[in-house]
Image (cartoon, rainbow, N blue to C red):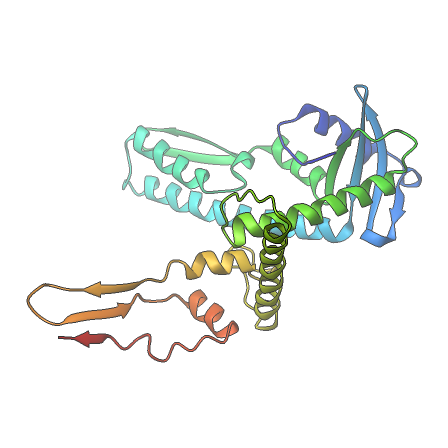
Length: 278
């Protein structure tokens, strides 16, 4: 079973077009997952389209926030070019590519640049497709046609839960691949996975209770993994000239760092006091 929301797959586009044209009566409500499902056959393959109102609201809000963020940067570039601060076409293109390379919605923008000129626009076909995709994802399944689409969704959700736990090991704990064969080591490996999942859940709850928001997506709380990635930027450094005292200090923290540390109840009282040793 494969869940796909890829934007460059023609089969997904065709299946979504069929789903969006379907009558409401064709959709089946799955209250367990707060979703509706639609069985679709396309090119001798079976697909199950899943839709939820909550996901649509989240996708739409996230898309608009990312579009606004990207557009602000493109507008800033447009103003720089209009003021004559950037005139060379190659440099203008390079600046535009740097902006779009960091944007998750770069596919929604087009631009035209020449010496002393820069204009951007939306790719309206891409925007329309993105709107059609909001709230949906597509399951490409090999399960037989007599398997109810609700069961297909349940199987996918179960599979995703297992994958999430393995992702905890790979991303959260950052464990390298470990091959174990004895029962004792297998149990130990599973225990680490369970412990990591518990710690991640506690961190997620702490961030939620402290209302620490994602700086890129203000409508959602900061994830535990993003929090750890941000905290990983803090460093304890040692300054030693070789001719005087040694100074150890912690690098300056951002407002987001402070919010995360407070949510995790970390005592940073001594962090801003350089330790000087002779």
